[in-house]
Amino acid sequence: MSIQEKIRKINGIQVTYYYPVISTYKYDKCTPIWGEGFLNRNDAVIAESKMKKQLEKSPYAKRLRTAITFQEVKDEWLKTRATKEETTQIRDKNYCDIYLSVFDDMDVRKITALDIQDWVTLLTGKYAPKTTNMAFNLMSQIMDYAVIPLRIPVPEQIYITACMSCTQLLGCVRGKSAESVNMI
Image 1 (cartoon, rainbow, N blue to C red):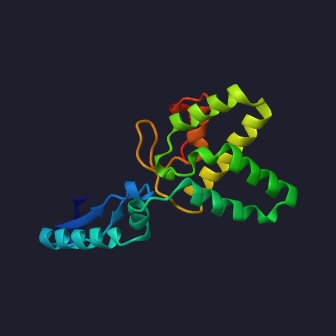
Image 2: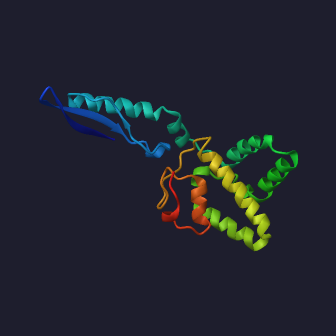
Image 3: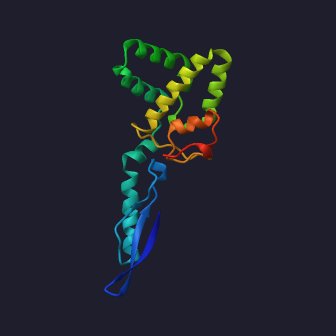
């Protein structure tokens, strides 16, 4: 949150405009919101406070304040599988119930790459590679669904920006470095 000054020349006279700017990084947007320009800095400060209040009332802020469990996202995602063949739907539901239920009570925003890596390591030790891969792919699809259609804000992490999708995050788990993962 800041007030940005811009000097413009109007009919040969320099005029300073003050623009309120609101950061939206924690609400899943990557670009700041700019307000209209004001001739008086105090007017820009007042406009900035109004913009902050509007942003706090937005759906992004409400989602950030409420916990969204992995179970809720998984159930929503499973509903989208209705377009698939019945055998595919049943297989996906069974995999979710058996292998992904570990995450059911967790807030989806608090699931980290390390949590997923530990889970994959556990599955690798107990199950066949095909089973582990299928469970991981379903997890990836569910997390992508949480980030893109549901617009659940992604928390800031050490090497992850708020704009990174889950597929890119999970790419880090599969052995790629964060720097080599393409950003959206």
